[in-house]
Image 1: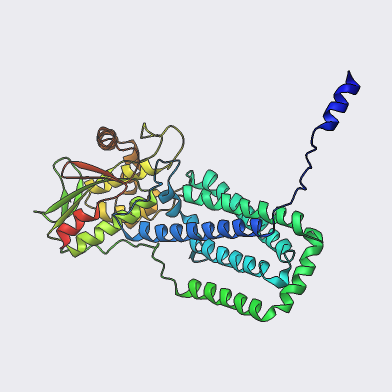
Image 2: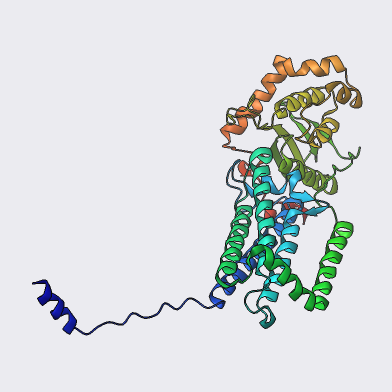
Length: 401
């Protein structure tokens, strides 16, 4: 039976196996270039977002979803700037350099083999940088940026492709290949040196000439600008008979709150007869806010209590400006020094954090914020409507114009 079947199958036409033809070099090269361009475009978005969040009270990025997933929180952290240049701009420069290296890898003189070992080590450095930034977001900022995560994925994808192309087309390995790459780059030294000098000049220019727009200082308190306390005990500044009343809920350790508060204060100073700004507290401190179940913005509640005491003694706005400039990294704040600067009784000032009337005042602010549906800071109430994280530009334009 077996012999019969074997004879039968032998009579059938035989199918010839087609040889497996591997993809050509360009099937790998073009995706790598596209991935690098995606990283460059993402860095541009992050740079623009970093600028807008620091200069426009009406701006809120699309990925400001929650406390844990918030691009604006990451952009306004102290870790968003490195050596006087926003990290997003460093990313733009880095991807420009990557694209330059890739263009060299695509030249005929590279013969599909050269520059890729160098590209692998550059991608490895970028990937390590991504891990460091991810660690900072996790351990220090306690918030993640979606668009930053995109850059992490881009860097790991570039690293993988660099390894794969080296394995597929390389002829000397990742270590010995660097020496061969160096010979090629030396033969192209004119364009390479010109490009490197150009990058160094760009970095130097940015470090010296880039305006530090992320350092927003509080406007000077002009005596001509009216201020007072509402019937409910909340400090206000601006117009006695305003065209626009903005009620803000803030946290002294929230960088976005500081930026937007100082921006609004500047608007009030420029339009003292049109805008009234009322300040209320909504510290995202787990000891004072039931929304927060884990340690977060530790000390923000205590600063709010100190400011309530200062308001009762006519020194609120001076204390307010001082507290907004306290960094989250400053875990210990000297109450005695603050009291002396504000010309307040140090003993009474320190006791304010245990005063039941002041604690009750803060509790009412937090309860009001919760009843309005606030889930974070800053929050604004204008004409009965609640805006979280931003104020629509149209509202401000109507008054300013």
